[in-house]
Image (tube, rainbow, N blue to C red):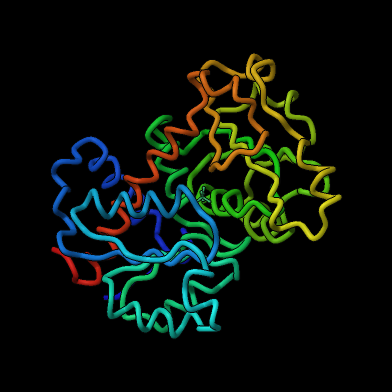
Length: 309
Ligand code: CP
């Protein structure tokens, strides 16, 4: 059966747990998977800039013995001549076995999936969803904390435009006894739909605060985010808000010894580089886990499509 991934909620909790278990198995014994996708091709269709997502997808497919092709900007594809994503994916369905697509327009990978003969993975669509980042975040939390339940997670920075924050909240509320502390300036608070339809609807314990230092000692996880310049309507607002929270070593001293700092990256200046050497700073490890979780996802979708055993 042809299966796509548009949103992390497309996966049931059991499917998600199985996928994370597979990712951990690949991480522990990569040699066993080096030919799992022999002669299969991944197309990376990126209409928006990326370092981690595109290259970790490509690394993932190469690690599985497959091959990669694609484009890294709209300008270098026939989108520059006005080609639609539906025509593009029809053509790519003849060239590759699976496609990862990033697009600035929300819903574009979904439109592609409707016209595709190969699995399509949403690699980020505007301010909407970024499911493989969420899978990466979940693998990092599960691998380093051993559980999702009972954790207090601080989400800090741009909680309005930060698609990784929205997806992480939606994924985590499916596990018991999860608590959130939302740390943002007033203008960048979480969207109403997330507060009403996800947090309130599921009776989740959360609070919204404006001062990071006050809550540092309570956190098991601090998920930092960058203020998303590309989603702002005017530059003055961006400049006024961009340095609202800067995590430095002085603030880290307020945290527990076992608190972990995550960040989807890229970082601008919301985490001082002096924090990088703190053993609790795991954002580069998190980016590394992204390869393994994408290997597990590629294998899972190709298996369901009947392309690999
Ligand atoms: N985290 C993330 O999506 O990074 P890139 O934009 O570099 O892919």
